Image 1 (cartoon, rainbow, N blue to C red):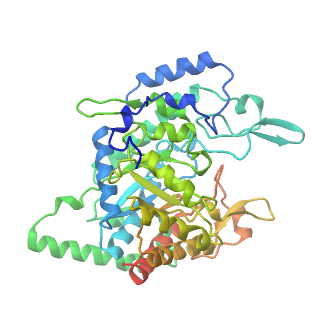
Image 2: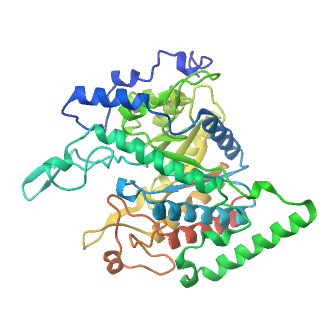
Length: 456
């Protein structure tokens, strides 16, 4: 460890704005710096979206996941849109995550930590700053927090006021999710309430129904012996997003009474994307000073001599629950890319939570122009991840998925064997293809079979 390892990270020449002295990738180009400054000043005065005690509770739960006592289920949209901030879409997204967690709890016989990839996932990194159509070049669409998807100069202008709109839509989403959870929407006594219309017609319906019936019988038996068990009437639920736009994150980074340091109160669990994880970059500088649990996406090009210094920078005190590494290698590359990283981190004795993202390394384009993912490749990468961790003597402690509660046709394969021709029927994503509700539940069942059968 370095000489500062015993020092609190916030004292090591860090402020919420010190990232501005570093190279900040994937940031929009705002035409009017004064307008941006006025907007971020306003944003800094608005109420936070989460609380410090929720953040610390999540960190403790992630520390338990590192020890194998919990399993992390992290999922949601690739990129939220303001237009999708509606009660049916939010509740259906919550339903599918609750259904998946029910499957995992039943099969893994351990608590599941539920983290939604929403209430702030309004920005997306892009491979190019501009897009050209028919000889016209405009800024790329970077998500609703930055600009609009329409291919016009007005829509593609980076608008600082969208930062305020993102905060408002995140708050509306969080408020509705909290109300649902507090009102008993997640009551394990009534998992049938989570049913979506598809259940009656799915090839997986019978298996899911048996599982629900078994859980109901178990609960009734326990309560016959011990009386009502209040803990089953609600669940803990946390939010996460890629902390891409650093002006937004800085404005919502706050100090709170009776706690040292700084908290990012825009979300419980921010992560650094693969494109912005440079050791000397602005995102790592920002992340090293906040007290939230944090995650980093790790791609197939990352080598041990890159990953270990990043771990040291982000978690010099080896704090439990602090750092999650989300590997997203691709089905064809995980076998060679992941083992050296596991070995290096294990050799150094660093405390991390390993999580598999089997989505982002398996994206392809079809002949009819759709960006898609094959369920077999998603499943294949996840299968390999369990096997590779078992062989390395490490633990795969969670999954990170792009999914929706809607009846979309964006990923091929799955129980209904969706084909390239099916994509045109209900392809709704503005950015990346998502698992639909049926494919998501199928994957949860596959995780249970693989985990119970292949990894303790």
